Length: 470
Image (cartoon, rainbow, N blue to C red; front, side, top):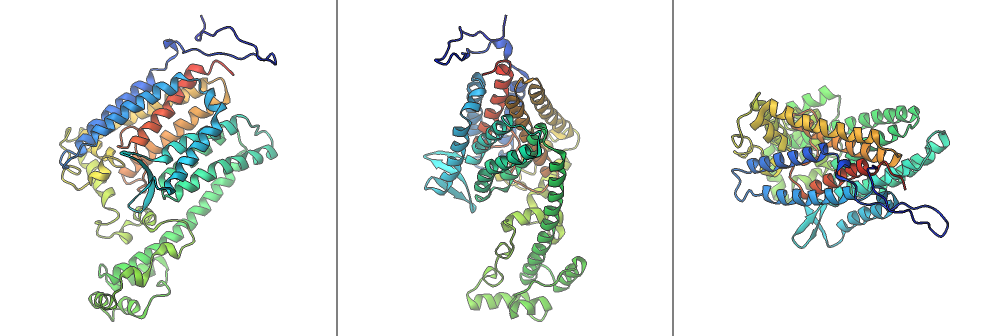
């Protein structure tokens, strides 16, 4: 018997056959992915609770549990419908994501810590970028599935479309600003282009361009470190001799445009205390006198984003005492290191419980640090194993898909998940710079949980319906 039962195919007025789908039988359900998703979600709830054990009103695990239940409902709903419906309505889905991003600049948009990333409707708060990524992924898969990349001209035309489709959401996400979410899309796009058999020349060219960007970024970060060192001298955090040594080691010159008082402090003829008195008498702040580096650089990065990159590349120059921008990552490394082989036991971790790892990040971007401290190396190995099975099984479903759209969709989901896992775990261990990239289903966050469940629901739909065509 067929895996799907279909009604008699009705004829349209033009005689074309149309297929009517009914709900797939239970035998056409892949159980590996949903079981792993449930396991990861349960682990996440328990360790979000553990991370907030000593936090007053630390109840983030409760809404996380609600989001997981809603996510399960989304997963079941999305997987029950033929994924070809997404193909037919991909423009509406893509434009809906763009509209959600644009609403951030409406009265519904909420600003937190200078970032415009959330929509607030009553008591409900959502992060539109998570849903825009779904629409963008579906749109890219649609474009590539319907295109031929066998010729140079055809490849260039498709690349133009891909860039146009990608540019709008990337720009809107970057302007929030949310560098992590925007960067997560690029590896996914390259993977989709690779699977689509784009010419190898493109990837060689992009790799060369990537190296050039890294060089420019490295130089910009060095000049930013010069700016930071200058401020630290003015604040009395380091001595002028240390600043001069930094300049010599990095072959840099003092930053231009400083006032006479700033130059006196750098030369050692005025003390930082005297400079502070000068600022008070002039009713000025350090920012008023020195400004922000981001206003002088042509790279579109905020200074806090440069802080994160610089703290990864040269932590001793940016935060020599380890109490500033490098604090969270250092405390995370301590948590991972003290976990040992078997960990300290559930709710016995100290970094989050004693407040060294702030609750705000311990439940989200650094949830893996809490987990590794309490379960140790073996616990971490188990979770990484679950992610490996999840991603491997998703790629297996991609391999068995009968059409390009379904195959690309699964590959895109797998790579997007892989980027989140790789960057987040690397960040926790100090192997990657700090970025706001959460860990799928472990990190706290309702919008991210829903987006993960929707994406995995699409993978299940591909598994169920890929044998039929429309």
